[in-house]
Length: 489
Image (cartoon, rainbow, N blue to C red; front, side, top):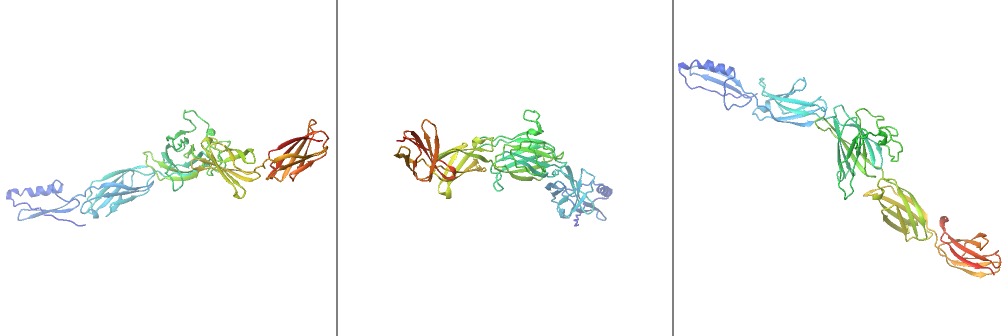
């Protein structure tokens, strides 16, 4: 260690001042001599002379206290401290870092202003003091900093249930965790934070929470989530957990993807006493979400986040039904699996002819549509796509044939005493069914033909008959009938 020596010489003194030197030396030994302008942490040699004899005293000043103590890194079990000291000889100082809260040995630090402290407890308050010193054993005054270590991150973060508008998320907590905060965001991995960002705070270890989210449409004002705990609703009325929590099917860590569960069960199945369960209600179907959970110490210090991503089940169109069909049009109805808000859906109905010979698209806001402009005796693929905003659900499908059009120019071409000839025209049917009914007697029978004319024989003379013709189409379809009446001769 370098040392500096300064000599302090008193002016020539008279014999009457000889008594002063012992006194000065005594004061120096007792630390009662004040010298202005000295540098901290420096050796000084004080010399006292009367002209004929000289007396010396070695004095070393204390290091200055450190300043700007900062915790540059905090984890559940480690803390890294840095500090500053501007003394001239600071690069050769040693430092004592002491945990003032526990009876731990001091940590010596030499020639640097950084210290990594390990073996700490999560979510615990500590006071660390730093004392500068020099090699001769002269120590300066300590300075201290208060630090709270981070709580341990949550563990076992998992999705226990996935529906269209409900998702159950659970995790386990360390003993030092006082509460947790969840940040819920929507969008894909690249688009997160572009839309929804909801903070859900005050989630205690061992708690079971229902969180109702009010996700606005584009023209609505956003509202904060409604959080209820331990089966209590907003009116503090106790509910059975079976009323709100979905039924786990197998392992509690295996997601359930069935929105239409008939039974619900206590989420405590397979859970530990410090587990936290949260049921998110009011999500959008078919949407990607990210849930990030932060553990919190009693003073609000947060641990490292743990995140999980999930996608709600898409809404599904089903039971697409043909209500009415003709040669050139059809009326369809269908159902949507999301019965909470079916009115806000938009549906795109895509109608494609065989070999894509004809493509029609209709957009409706109801669960029914009338499709026109079709061709008779034609096969069509029908697809109904549900949309909730930008999220597309699972489409429903239907395959149909349009029937042939009615025949034209249906007429009687010949009349005999026991037969009547008929003829007609058709360009979209190769088979025809003719119902023959005897007037008054109610007797009827059927004739079929692939021609566009026929002679109906075996009739009674002088009797009136009714002839009704039905064009036959593909896959058992049947067109609208045409009718003529005539009497035998």
